[in-house]
Image 1 (cartoon, rainbow, N blue to C red):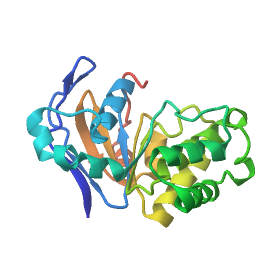
Image 2 (cartoon, one colour):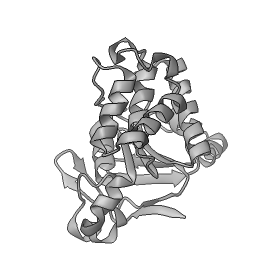
Image 3 (spheres, rainbow, N blue to C red):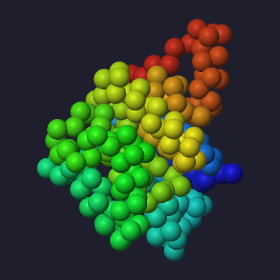
Image 4 (tube, one colour):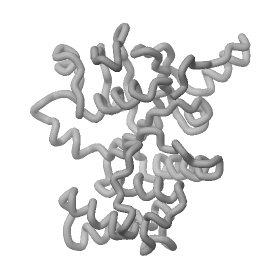
Length: 239
């Protein structure tokens, strides 16, 4: 089952000049990676997919994510964690989750259940009542993802989910995302410039370069091709 299809996604902006269509579909239950060298391009693509920025009108009409009269339903089905944290470092993990649950309109027993569930699911039990400024980097990231998951979204959008983490933190985050996908059947879409990350956890990867999809396949297919012909996947400007 396809979650959505992006067709003829062409957005001419000062920082993103697409040379042609950017077509790809995301299937239900996938971990879908968008491997893109330009930081601004990655952010723009993710912003379009989250319906915060629209492609040209004819593309908006074709994309299920860009139907204006159903934007509320579309956005309620999403969870989003961008590079810039929205957590308050002076609050505890539990207080942050409770605050954002209230922002999403969760109330009473449901809010309490979702906060408690997120604390357990994302492995922050022992630090739930510690202020976030005292968290190690990977725990901050896990709390950020927990915040995005409070509404039980069908699609989770992540921007650079392991940026700034050491190797141990990256692997813990990969394990967390795999478990969330496997146990909760959550479709995960994330942008990255890290080839190893894309290979490690993605079901499929779209390689976007200068506003155009130049490859779309499973990571093992890319590895097989590179093994056969000795090709190296490199970017001129890996931001």
